Length: 293
Image 1 (cartoon, one colour):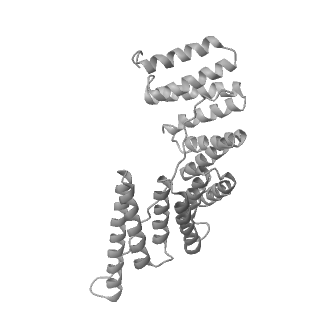
Image 2 (cartoon, rainbow, N blue to C red):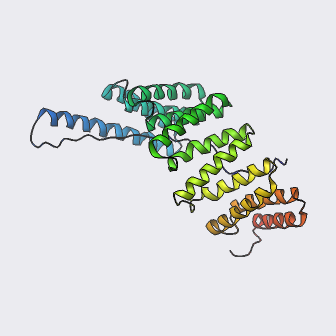
Image 3 (cartoon, one colour):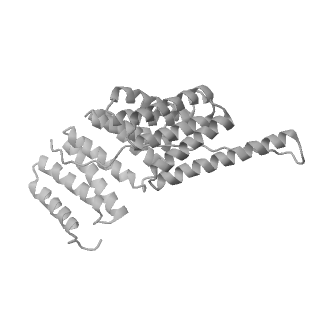
């Protein structure tokens, strides 16, 4: 089996910053309104701290983002209590920052604390619990701790399915991550199942125009190839190519990936002429010697 076959998907991480606001419907001075005003000011301060974390993160300023995340955690503990959703969110975001800096031990500690608080405060079946499970599982995948990761992905999936339904787009992240786990373990029949679920969600939610749809098709075709199901892979690769050409144009770099994958497939099918034709087209796109789309 050729190792040059390329698959699009990479690991996905979701780090939610949950912001809620409290208000008071009463008019005029009252103890409840004063308390609500204080609460709202705390929420606004909390929001500003999280914005600071997010902005630095997006700019790649990881040290500044980490400092801001620690500041947000300290504020959340003082304003909302040690066991509060805000503290859980701050811990989750801090874990994410440690993860992207490859500080896996520190990231695991923060993710676990966030998960424990969310389960205790929000309940085992809360959506935020699924986020913590997904992030912690992905951290384990990065460390090749696959047996620890798989049940967490499945638990996250069960929570989302129970809360949002079996065709909700919220399932795409854990399903994609679970697919990556299966591919890393060369469990291709399992990857085939999860990829089909992903495609079904895109189709049932009318999101086939999303760029990840044809890329998922490519992944499924690649998995068929790796399973030796060459005839099943062929129409899926052709469907992928058509979708990408329509979405991105015939000369887009992503088209090259599919063309080269298809060439590998046709070699396996004994059609060297077709394989060479596809490789020639891929080479032309790389060299910029292409006709207008």
